[in-house]
Image 1 (cartoon, rainbow, N blue to C red):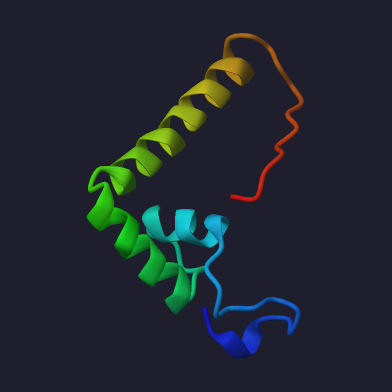
Image 2 (image 1 turned 180 degrees about the vertical axis):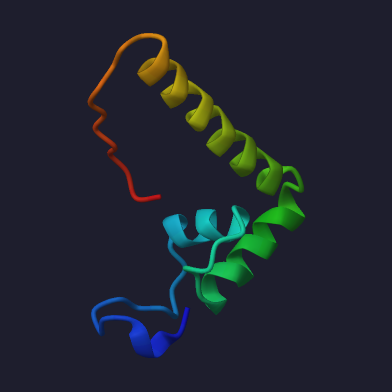
Length: 81
Protein backbone atom coordinates (compact mmCIF):
# COMPACT_ATOMS: atom_id res chain seq x y z
CA UNK A 1 0.00 0.00 0.00
CA UNK A 2 1.25 3.45 -0.87
CA UNK A 3 1.48 5.75 2.15
CA UNK A 4 0.19 8.58 -0.06
CA UNK A 5 -3.20 6.83 -0.26
CA UNK A 6 -3.60 6.70 3.53
CA UNK A 7 -5.60 9.23 5.56
CA UNK A 8 -3.30 11.40 7.69
CA UNK A 9 -4.79 10.13 10.98
CA UNK A 10 -3.36 6.64 10.31
CA UNK A 11 0.21 6.38 11.58
CA UNK A 12 1.91 3.95 9.19
CA UNK A 13 5.14 4.11 11.19
CA UNK A 14 3.51 2.08 13.99
CA UNK A 15 2.54 -1.56 13.40
CA UNK A 16 -1.10 -2.57 13.69
CA UNK A 17 -2.36 -6.09 14.39
CA UNK A 18 -4.88 -6.09 11.51
CA UNK A 19 -2.22 -5.08 8.98
CA UNK A 20 0.23 -7.65 10.39
CA UNK A 21 -2.48 -10.28 9.95
CA UNK A 22 -3.00 -9.02 6.40
CA UNK A 23 0.73 -9.51 5.78
CA UNK A 24 0.60 -13.09 7.09
CA UNK A 25 -2.26 -13.81 4.69
CA UNK A 26 -0.32 -12.42 1.74
CA UNK A 27 -2.35 -9.22 1.51
CA UNK A 28 -1.32 -5.84 0.18
CA UNK A 29 -2.75 -3.59 2.91
CA UNK A 30 0.29 -3.37 5.18
CA UNK A 31 3.29 -1.10 5.65
CA UNK A 32 6.99 -1.46 6.45
CA UNK A 33 6.39 -1.23 10.23
CA UNK A 34 3.80 -4.02 10.00
CA UNK A 35 6.10 -6.24 7.95
CA UNK A 36 9.08 -5.65 10.25
CA UNK A 37 7.02 -6.59 13.30
CA UNK A 38 5.59 -9.62 11.51
CA UNK A 39 9.07 -10.87 10.65
CA UNK A 40 10.16 -10.46 14.29
CA UNK A 41 7.13 -12.45 15.41
CA UNK A 42 7.88 -15.18 12.85
CA UNK A 43 11.42 -15.45 14.22
CA UNK A 44 10.03 -15.85 17.74
CA UNK A 45 7.31 -18.31 16.67
CA UNK A 46 7.85 -19.68 13.14
CA UNK A 47 4.36 -21.26 12.75
CA UNK A 48 2.58 -17.91 13.16
CA UNK A 49 2.03 -17.36 9.42
CA UNK A 50 0.66 -20.88 8.98
CA UNK A 51 -1.55 -20.38 12.06
CA UNK A 52 -3.03 -17.19 10.58
CA UNK A 53 -3.74 -18.95 7.28
CA UNK A 54 -5.27 -21.97 9.02
CA UNK A 55 -7.40 -19.64 11.14
CA UNK A 56 -8.72 -17.93 7.99
CA UNK A 57 -9.40 -21.29 6.36
CA UNK A 58 -11.36 -22.46 9.42
CA UNK A 59 -13.42 -19.27 9.37
CA UNK A 60 -14.30 -19.93 5.73
CA UNK A 61 -15.34 -23.52 6.46
CA UNK A 62 -17.40 -22.47 9.49
CA UNK A 63 -19.24 -19.73 7.61
CA UNK A 64 -19.92 -22.01 4.64
CA UNK A 65 -21.35 -24.66 6.97
CA UNK A 66 -23.51 -22.16 8.83
CA UNK A 67 -24.84 -20.65 5.59
CA UNK A 68 -25.31 -23.83 3.58
CA UNK A 69 -26.16 -26.45 6.19
CA UNK A 70 -27.50 -24.59 9.23
CA UNK A 71 -29.54 -22.04 7.27
CA UNK A 72 -28.00 -18.95 8.84
CA UNK A 73 -28.68 -16.00 6.55
CA UNK A 74 -27.15 -13.09 8.45
CA UNK A 75 -23.68 -12.68 9.95
CA UNK A 76 -22.19 -9.91 12.04
CA UNK A 77 -18.42 -9.60 11.66
CA UNK A 78 -16.75 -7.80 14.56
CA UNK A 79 -13.03 -7.21 14.60
CA UNK A 80 -10.17 -5.33 13.09
CA UNK A 81 -8.71 -7.91 10.79
